[in-house]
Image 1 (cartoon, one colour):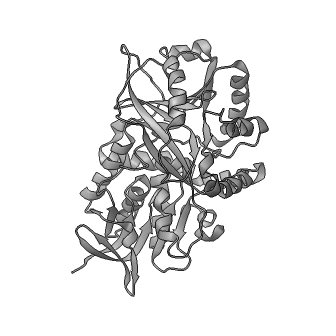
Image 2 (tube, helix red, strand yellow):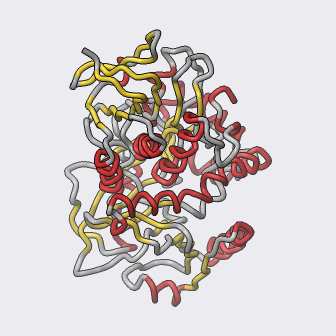
Length: 414
């Protein structure tokens, strides 16, 4: 006997949980299915914890020759190309480079703006409802620079965010030291005031999933690859038994291709891998903000579990063996920057950011399969955008007027 529901959401990361909550709020009976049987255990767990309200520019591929050359030569700590992986990754990197051309990148950023503008409000509403507001800190984040030259250039570049009603402060070394006295080695910093951060990203996803359960939602353990169409809709096998639904949402992040490719969709989903490690601060040292070392190529974030050191992007296949070279490279500089003590993790955590070449997610119906919907490819912003893209998807699935035109995110745009 099958378990029945209106909708199954495959994947219980921030994106999947956000979609499940939005659909539930519109009166749908929703089941979340995740291979872990729990929420927030995969990509959503390992990130800088930023809710990036100020990200009006996307993470485009660098266009300047110096940065590209440093990356190719292995001298850029913020980006690493895994050379043995190039036969698989090079075509996607080339497409990413093309979509990062200034005119195209500006159009993609305009398309992302309606999501960015609403991301923090959507999070705060859910956090309040879930009793998890204490996990979110509205202190902004810091981009710090080791030279006067890079600091001045960043200040000039940051000015345009004021066109979007956003705020920042440019600090010299003395002003920076006043707000982060335990941080050393910088000529100054840009403080982005509008974003928020989370001290336990996995915990926040779990709190949202708890809200989903409190409102009557169900979370099952199961293999999304068992998804199969039926005359009535879709079936998927779970540890609680077969589940029969009218509609299915693919929100599997970097694993979404395991569903859409067998169904015949050629969506160019690429991967940027990243690593993190937690450390105990030494002698009561405190980090008040998430801090990006723009010149050093790493980010330090204050977390409930010590200080998290996160790396930039590694261009490699999702399932190839971990290669935490970037973490090993930046850790000595991070220790000079902030008094980090013992490592708190047995080994570096590795995750995969699901990216499309134009750095926009896929949100909307699967063009050739009734009742199948996509919600994936959020690149660096899955944690930021999960709740708001869930709202947009729910608008589309329930026939409500969407808050923005969903056309830029359609699956067949490629």
